[in-house]
Image (cartoon, rainbow, N blue to C red; front, side, top):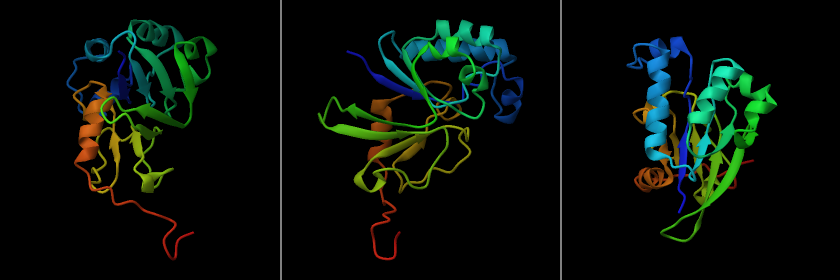
Length: 191
């Protein structure tokens, strides 16, 4: 049975990200190798993995080489540093789809109910069906945004999860500890 994973901000081949985010790698080769190893340690060949942007800073050839090593059935929500993938149809073929924004539903294996999820490279304050318990998953901020205990959203970027993708089940556990106080535009005075 396949599982669902989420990740963001791999920044393959990006030397400066190690400095900006204080990543503990000696060079980009060690960083890329570690990110692929940790990804493949948890994501199986038939698992779905949703990458929420900023996959690679390298050339098309370097990007292709790393995508080929990466387990899972891949989906991409473009980030602000995914130009090489956005411009290269050959690289897009490594993904089931590539979008700027996505809304997905995952059938929960325990509750047997659908979980509606908004995928974006960027964090949002409001999103579709927030007041109905939908989740919003994002990257971009590299763990620098304070977590909002009243919002069903989290940063799924590798800098927030010890350089691993995070599973649906782990996200579900995190969301169960949140208060979910939605911003509902339907209340009096709203638009």
